[in-house]
Length: 143
Ligand SMILES: Cc1cc2nc3c(=O)[nH]c(=O)nc-3n(C[C@H](O)[C@H](O)[C@H](O)COP(=O)(O)O)c2cc1C
Image 1 (spheres, rainbow, N blue to C red):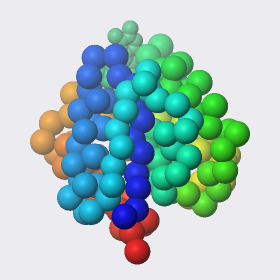
Image 2: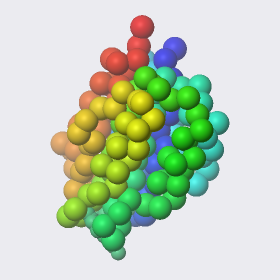
Image 3: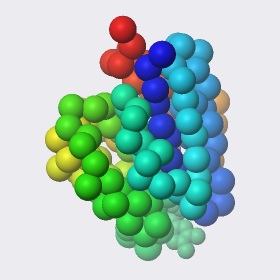
Image 4: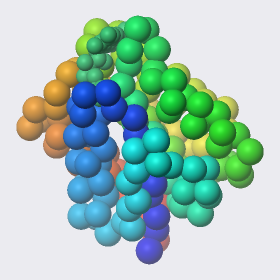
């Protein structure tokens, strides 16, 4: 079974809601999904997966530093040609997911663009977009 790891950072829970909806979509399409808050994640968590989805909220014009540090720590892994994507909740500028998407591209990953960004708390439509992203990842890495 193809594997997806979802690692996310959230201050007030909005990006966490996105992460869980991506998980739902991916599971419904048959993926084996591991989901972790970045505080509990290590690089080993993504070493053996086929796709990585990184979520983070934007604060003060930047992505959450803990998530950026985590993605920096992935530089020592072999991620070339794996599927990667970034997502996150934001208020007005939403830099975080763009920064992460560029980092993943720098690792030679096959990055889904543009990153999925949702303003504030995801409503039904946003949740559906997240589920669809999970399904899209499944399409890219299954069989
Ligand atoms: C102190 C503070 C600073 C923020 N700075 C930004 C910012 O620079 N750009 C932006 O797009 N949103 C900014 N936001 C809005 C958050 O990104 C938004 O509330 C988002 O939904 C938080 O996601 P989370 O619940 O996953 O932490 C800021 C929010 C707070 C409380």
